[in-house]
Image (cartoon, rainbow over all chains, first blue to last red; front, side, top):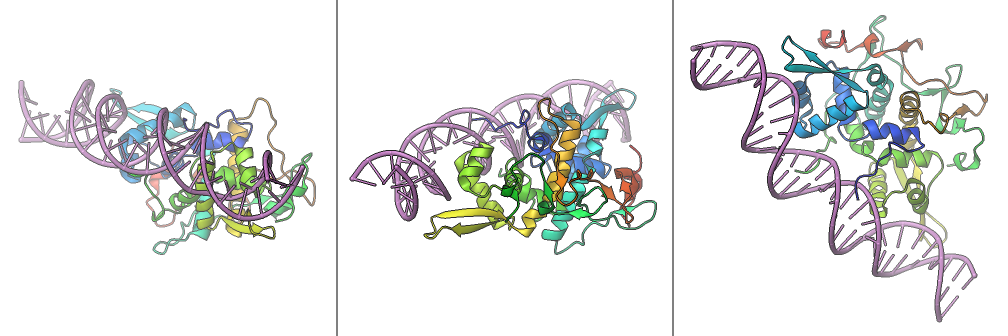
Length: 154
Length: 154
DNA sequence: AAATTTGGTTGCTTTTTGCAACCCTATTGA
DNA sequence: TCAATAGGGTTGCAAAAAGCAACCAAATTT
């Protein structure tokens, strides 16, 4: 009766969700992208229970999304830092944020205004693109070798 | 002691995760993108418990990600179809799939080869882009008006 | 008329979550 | 030197959610 695991699923989305698909993990990654590195800071900023935070940080470290680094001379403090794998979730987080901003806008706050550091201009809307950069919707794509009618109408 | 809700969080990522951030919801959406519409088909293809599936489908309908449509003359059958809001999760799902393919590749299956229906060519890697389409990493962006040093080193 | 399909609901057990309390190791500081 | 505090946890307990199996009712098939 345990929660189902997807870590050996043939589907890479399922495997990805096994690592960052629970309620807290992706928020921890997001917070890390904002610069948070310390246990107590994650706890305060997310309002997460300490045991859950501990479990999630451990899992994220085990999965290579974060790394645990001892800081300070005597090793009693540590930081949790994004790895390359964790930083690579940037597109996922931004896509999710743009979706949330579009479909569940906050009545109080404007959508987050991420900008390119070099030009100062806002970033683009994330989308699936063809080889030339043209935006593609769900219906514009197919899977070679798969019976395709199922995805064509709707 | 209830599970924390994020539906009124000021963070749009948290609000998005409140709708599709649990273990099953995004997989249901993914399956719907593959063309699945029927309760029994979701159940068989995902291997999800019926009560959980029922709960998730209801939640996704309540949140406007799926719509429940009666089909057949006598209304005893229905289909769950993606709404525009649900289809708009395409970029999120593809970003997550590409991340999973890159960092947790399956030993058995090659990464899914999504292609543009018009050209037949593979789709691009999803990434955050500046206004000109140049790829941006986490460190290339900033939030106007926010003290920024926190995100600069890492 | 009986079996099957579809879309559920109900009961029950195992896990997970969330909160509070506690622990151990520095470090501060009076 | 001894107490207080901060950081990073662990433990215990109650509530909630997940998972499985059994059951249900309407429609369809045989």
